[in-house]
Image 1 (spheres, rainbow, N blue to C red):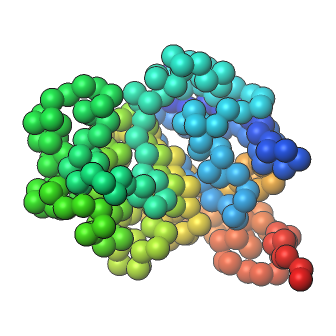
Image 2 (image 1 turned 90 degrees about the horizontal axis):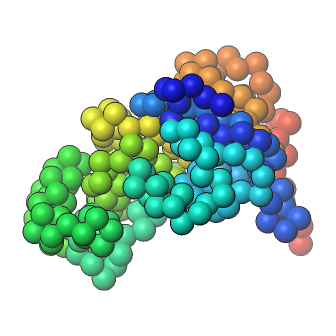
Length: 259
């Protein structure tokens, strides 16, 4: 397992859904305060890996240690422990349509940490400022926001409880290149300000290069390459090179549905 500086340590992680073997023995260590981006094609298990670590999906086999504590069994105590440590920015922001922005951000503070609504609202306003939004945005509803603003609000919610571990699931999907870069910069700033350990899932190589200390590629249920962003262009791995350059031809064959 990892040393005292290791926040996340995964060993021989397996997860299947019926006959579909999604994770086939993932090994992964991530040190405290580091940012790891996991890349790979659709259906390769990136989100399943993140959900196993988060405690949203129970692995079939293997260990998941967070700060030296094995949470793979996902007892109620394990889930509470992980929930208390982590924050997540979901792919579609996943905001509650019926709640104003400030209450979306403060949801965990009010309903889990039992903070007063006034204190929670004050924290929400502070988080909005941290992602470059004015306090009055807190009175709007998610449907009144653009996609980029919804992502910012999602990030504000993720950081509201000052988490030790942050998860980002396709943080720039659906955004134009300029707004994607704004989100990437905000992620960098907030992760650094919190001193948090971060795992991001993305198809966006520009985002991966910008926010990662290291990049890992998941293919056929295993990590097949890991290294610093500047090393990925010279990975000497044909599957990594095909993915990075977006080539149809190569060792990775996409399954096509025949009529």
